[in-house]
Image 1 (spheres, rainbow, N blue to C red):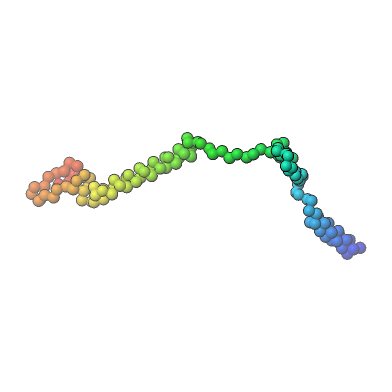
Image 2 (cartoon, rainbow, N blue to C red; image 1 turned 135 degrees about the horizontal axis):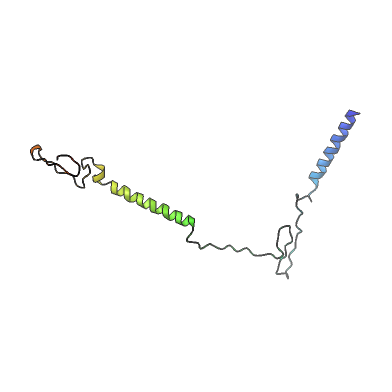
Length: 127
């Protein structure tokens, strides 16, 4: 009795799977929208679907003319920070900041002989 029941259930399962895959009308869990054929005289197309409006509307893409938003302000701040950084790099590439002989002076201190050296108030060194 057991093998007969097993063979019968496998055959019923195989037939039902084969039939369900061969049926082209199945469109999923939602009902299929009916196909509307357009005629030459009809100017307004009516769509009838699950989530559609009664009349077909033309889709117009509008370009946004927003100039003051958080994103634009962010980009302006980023550009300003980049410009400030470039200015600082240009400023610090001068010898006043790169050459260690300047040591806090705008111009290179004058080298005097040891008996004529003066005390510098700027850097606290005799030169």
